[in-house]
Image (cartoon, rainbow, N blue to C red):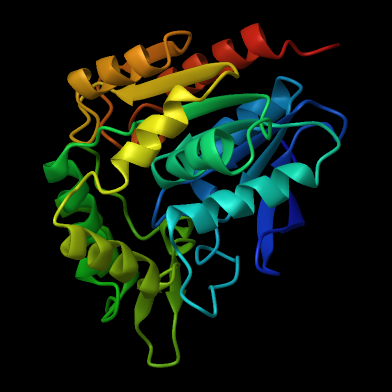
Length: 291
């Protein structure tokens, strides 16, 4: 499956970078990754959707991957949400959105609060308004650990990932891992995202002393959803509990639900085939491909 690079308009004058897969006239599916990731996290799923006839657009969020860093350090979920609205409005048709973690929160706020009617459907990957405090702390702790000091080598980064994801086979310093790192002039390797992002999130949590800060707004946004919705939970997630998923389904009673066995919060990375099956099934039911 051919992959094309695309520039898309975000908010605040930012130009965001994306990769596209599939026919140019296919139904658009926008994929927004989680915090600290890049659009490469969607490569297998986006390629699969492209082969199925969809136009899959995997986006680098602001401050991540090849997309620019915010000059004002604007990394609130609303900022990411405004970017998704701007990107979606640049398409001829409202896209389906698949958002993992941060990307899902941004999509929830975009559709439920900022600009209802932006998306044709919304798939939330292991994210709900009710997040487990310990899970949130673990994610932020991993991201903050080497945000400023970086790594001596890709192998050092691989060891850090292995400690964070002990259930997953250790990732060697392949070209895939290197795409998540940038080599600076000092010779060290740094994550391919702006350290101000995680520092801002951590600061807001410290001020509020609440892992679910903003959850009231997120609950209201979820309650306002009227478009087709799909919640995908990692069966072993430490961020979205079964109770959190059940609460979301009460807020959005028309939502479809998939629980991916053997997957942690990193659903697509842990069980890509099962995740792809669930996502593609929902899209085919909601937005059938016209051959």
